[in-house]
Length: 121
Length: 425
Image (tube, rainbow over all chains, first blue to last red; front, side, top):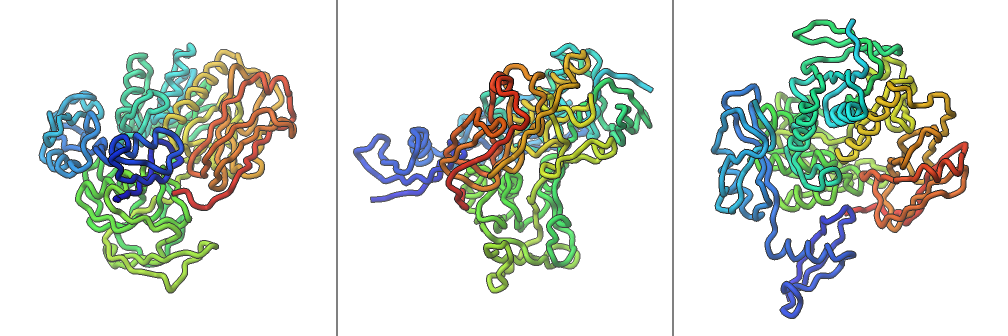
């Protein structure tokens, strides 16, 4: 039987969870070591579809600001982070930009957009 | 000389929220003085997400969090000057500032809110031996270079200190193509959030070396490498464990200090524990009409708590301007007792309280299954239970003013009881 160690980040306690492969359990894993039920959903998400919000900056060409902070509008699959970074590093934006403006649609085929984190005049 | 009812020094999250709250409480004549070229403070370089969970119930990036307050400030038409550095404040509330456009500015203020924030401890503060080449940065300086100025700081990096800024920079550098060899932490536990340890270190297989420190820096013009050794229980390096790491950059994330040069000039009393001004229930300093909030008072780990504290300072400044604060009440001291490092505020004028009051504190060790007690003259008036307490996580206890008004104590003290553990993660 496979098992995996996970540290829960749902709150600052940081429970050390162990996930065991178990066909009969909900989600295909039996989770141990949690102290609230958020631990179970956290562990299942980490095992089946781990996602992260990606934040970075892109070049600005015509402003006193040299970089524009950007983010993915939603969390993207963890294994696409570096692919997304390649796309982030390829673009440059022209001011003005508004917070929330879409800069790359469907970044790295994730179905999620890269958006601006702030206004730039 | 110009005149304003309220001068706010610093346009970061504390200054913005304080000014907005003062306006909401009826103060018309407000100006914010900010030394950077724009408002927002350090949030503008904190491009990562995780801000605003308490205030907005959603996860924002630093610039997004700042933008919301900047927009609100603009809608209210609150005045501000950027590129303007305050160089002196006096006990009679005269503010002196300099700016490229206007030269020397003096303002007579009805009230002042100090919101200057904090700055980073440097190599000098922790006395790392070795050479003095280029390539040694505080983590926040490196963050500014990368996220605002657009310069990469290095290719092979060691980070000393596992506070949140150090962890965030480990991920940021990795995303930008650098190799982060290790994050070394003197203490046996990290002071950073668990979430950052997982998402910034584990996600990218960056080792966290607990109970380790940098013992030497090598390099002539540029850093060529650093030595790292394990430390014993007294935090002394164990020579035979020393290992050399070849790198071109060392980042230091070794703590923050409230920036209080202006407070000292005005002879405001400073708490040696927090390195910030002593404040009362109104966030008022030892000088009547001068208030303080945010990291200039004590270093926070969440900007949301800075905002809450700043709102209290902003509302209090308004009450002061409209003469709604009784300045002649006795100040009851709030004292940290066993297990507690400090408590904000340090004193309370009990009959000025309304509704509830937040006591902010830090504990001095990692505790499990702990209990924090608030005592009025030794008698417990409030108790809160926490499964987990750590020095890196500020605790907030909301207390009903009526409890204090009923007790009318001469002294309030806080203590913590629980199982001490040395290891958090």
